[in-house]
Length: 423
Image (cartoon, rainbow, N blue to C red; front, top):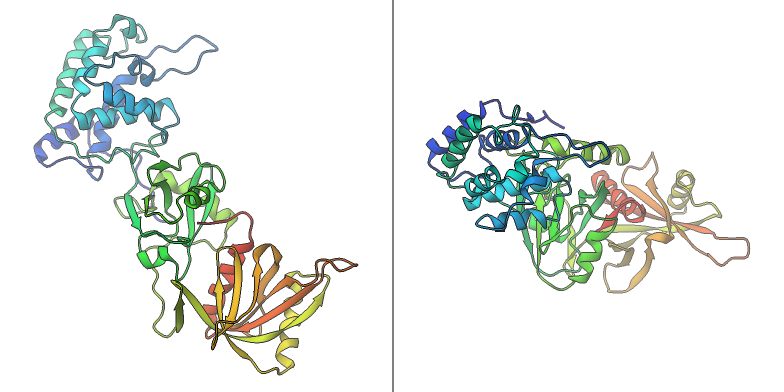
């Protein structure tokens, strides 16, 4: 997946502070010195923190900051305390530091903390910066230097602060009202990972979201710590409305894989062996001829016929069923094939007549015969109410190319896998 990002910048932290001031330009999330400055501030706030008594929660600097009076830095404290994307004390503390830097209130907060004897009791004077007067003054002077720097940070890009100071590239994706965006996602430890952008979908047309990206927000509502299916539920409630999605790119600012995302991508790869990171928008080959109907891209296929396969509808039956249909020499029918979010719909090419439609719960398998690279088939429940149990039919189609055939198979397979979600 590419080289891992360094966990911390190599420049000495104090040098990074001076370099930020010398640059003159506003400091953004892409600044190579920002993480080093934040590491310096966090290290100073943590240094000398007393360990709590046995049985109490582990103490972090946020537990001190959250007790500060809501004075001049109150807005930054409130933002951190109600942040739904930061689930830990470390994440909330980092959220506060970023907000305080941007709002130029960090010096005030540090002065308040240094002048609060009750909060300083959390620190050991012998090992602390804040509780040691000789060390505190140089630190506060350094914070004042930071107040001379203009920060232009995306404060909503905070979903990975629990894990790292390095933040992903954050993109706002605005799109028109539509029935479905056309993305397949997988939920991994509370994060919504895009594993496929469906061909011909609104998401593919917009050319913003890539396979491997994280969906972070929908219309301002956080998807951090999302439950399975939450993105789809939210989009259903917003049906017919313009959408604004915050997308976290799988590539970091240096173009490599964003390191904190690696465990999630590895988990996806374990469940989806064919999953691949998408480096750029996918465009259809010029040779592929498809029809747009109702805002959807349909496949031009040949329907070769159907055959009953009995009471077993596993993929093993395809190796016999497909040749049996081909050997029947039934005249093929030109059809339009639509792989929808909840069903497969096939209609005549020359008319709007629907030949059949099958919802995904009725699909038992999909695949192709090894000897015919551009022919595929899927099995569906034919007679669920039969006395001896369900029976299955195998429907066979021919596509224009092996690539298109494989694309359709993957889309159908994604449709009936209950571990994946369309949005």
